[in-house]
Image 1 (cartoon, protein in one colour):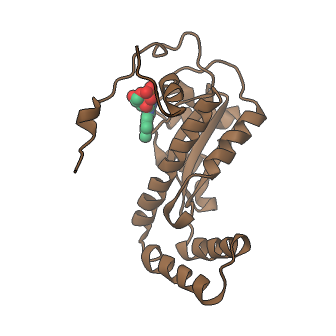
Image 2 (spheres, protein in one colour):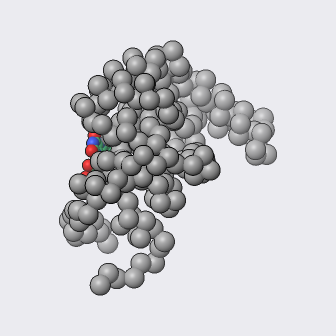
Length: 215
Ligand SMILES: Cc1cc2nc3c(=O)[nH]c(=O)nc-3n(C[C@H](O)[C@H](O)[C@H](O)COP(=O)(O)O)c2cc1C
């Protein structure tokens, strides 16, 4: 018998798994929108959210993306294909927009607001493009984690898919035009009754191998 959990997360984390085969069932707009709204609340470095989330329904485009995914059929056979992409626009622009948004939602004006802006600029604005991609990807992965949990809480299935040709994804989705670069794909939908991994047991390191306690 499993020990009782103090959080509501354990049952969801046990229920979810990386689905390899989705059924034809479509995720409702209500559920999809909830997942997107939850993902929006993910924490990120300075709150800059340097990524976008593409929601792809178009079957022709999804079919093309399978060819850029080493033949992983789940990239096209799903309800919606979500793709997290790093925002490669100038970080100074992101900071400007953030500071503006911040001032609309919080009472911070004048010198203090400017000081906050300068702190942000002095640390992230100097990134070169590869560092920006790395940094933005780290933030996108945090969003992915929220997305997976939100989906699980709604009994919506998902599979993070990192085994893709990101450059080909960028080309097919014409992401350059939007100053974006692919980070990871995540189809969502509902598990197929014949999904071969549906009943596999979870394989994780024992907690003692994972955690180092420094008392
Ligand atoms: C960043 C990342 C990339 C992954 N890429 C793939 C992939 O390309 N194809 C796939 O079938 N599963 C992929 N997975 C799913 C993992 O194999 C799966 O999460 C892991 O084996 C643990 O199993 P579980 O999620 O079913 O508990 C990926 C997972 C993560 C987090």
